[in-house]
Image (cartoon, rainbow, N blue to C red; front, side, top):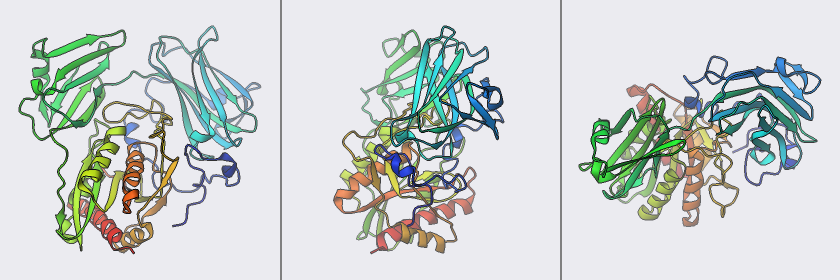
Length: 482
């Protein structure tokens, strides 16, 4: 399948920006995954897109002799720009964010350095947007600087590297506390294993559910020998053995913890997922995966889990189908996929996720975990945020899909769908799973890859059937392709 214009310069650990300078980004090109992480924004930002209670300095107020000329709601930055911030947001856990657009850049290294400073001019924190972290030129991205100490951000300095052309739309500062975290996360648990709930100091557990059953009374009334509470300067840790609070737990427990607007969730299993393949007992073994709802407090089902659940093994020819719903956690989702591949030995793996506005046939996975482009970051479902971290130090910078995307595209078009090629699966959990399933299946000679399904919040019978048929068509095309 042909790459869409402007997507050859997407983020990868060893992307060469010299190639990017030869292929300008096209801001007019539609990205099928636009809105991929929209649920981290909806309801939490004002109508201008700023976090609630943010102190914002817009382009018109930034323009001047020091910073540059304002044009079309942005400032064309000169070499260095000093932005004076208004009073406010003087507590710990701040996020300073600069909204920038890169029009050109050097072949490698830093493009722009964003530094938050206090009243004395001392640096409180800094973040560098480098060539290797840039997804594509001519797109607006956020460069967040996270500050933990209690301080007033008096000014923000942006330093543009020689050879770079950068526009600035605004600078904002807002309080951002770390949320609630379940550690160590989803996995196999014995009754004697310990779970720790970590939350900001002074915050309380407001809801504690296991498969929808409220366990908070049990947590609060437990003997101090069974539930330990430790308080540090910034955090509160609550630890307990699984069997003490959930002695009669099911084989699979969906654990959810909520505190002051933040939610964390994890899957607790007694044993690994069984290798159950349905359909033709002599057919080709195919594993399909979807995801839990996300964010952790997501109010609607995940379209990928709906699609995988609705797929009918009986509708497939020569296929034995295994279904698996993954936790939305950076390392745990990928490790669960690789474990199932090793134990259950499917010939092919098709992973599905919740995407943007179209069915996106992902072509490339990247050895990078990075949601720093979102203001405040995007935590996984257990509360972990990762920025500019490789998935594996020993793996290549990218892995190309092993799925027959041309055959899948044709099958989906026959269904009446309009799938789009995509070379940007994000750097969130979907990308991790794609990177893992290709790496695990490749040496076995099978097919593996990832498909994003359109963001969907309402699921009537017709919608469920539609997405089930999408999975069926993709699986059949994968098995039948030469």
